[in-house]
Image 1 (cartoon, one colour):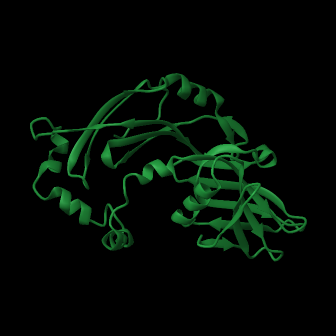
Image 2 (cartoon, one colour):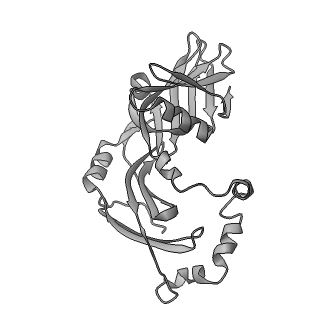
Image 3 (cartoon, one colour):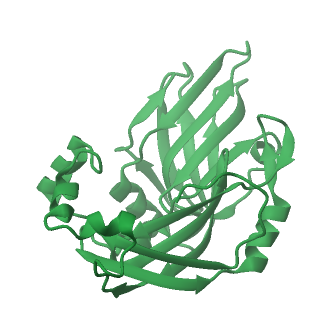
Length: 266
């Protein structure tokens, strides 16, 4: 599972087998990748704003979820794009079939011990699971729903929006700087889970606002209510003192304020 970075061809197949601790079963699958889509993504690349040069992806990320769901992303510094979603099937792995270095997973009590370990789950996550139970696996379908939307920063007079970073519920990541900030067009995006933006005022003092995180249910409900028939704006309205911010989700006919997000503005 640990490989060095080197020149490779674009992959054409993904094969994966894993143990789902929560479900106490193994999953496996083998899928053909959309090589043309991945090649186009790599060739298009993106602007690396640290080097101010065009760059391309250098990492593949595999996400595993309950019920055998598999998601594949291509990633690099400041950007992550979903490139495939797949369905695995459950399988039986015996000690004889398992790799020698994986046989420890089949020892009695292993799964229970791992689920109770702080190595996998921070104490606050353990407490949340104990109080509310585990999320419904169907939530991953909600995470992947897309809407045509864009972020909008309403700044005090003389303010200039410089950059922002958006983390999405579906695992994608997007950075807006330079021309992307100036263009700021509507795009098909998943719902954000985290957002940070930076700007300067007339005297070049720098400020930032963090929605870290949004309240998941509140923002899911807001986007669902506005629907897909009209473009949506996620608006950050910064107070004149640059120290407070209110957040709204808005289309041409309705505006909803997000009051439960954890907001820092400074």
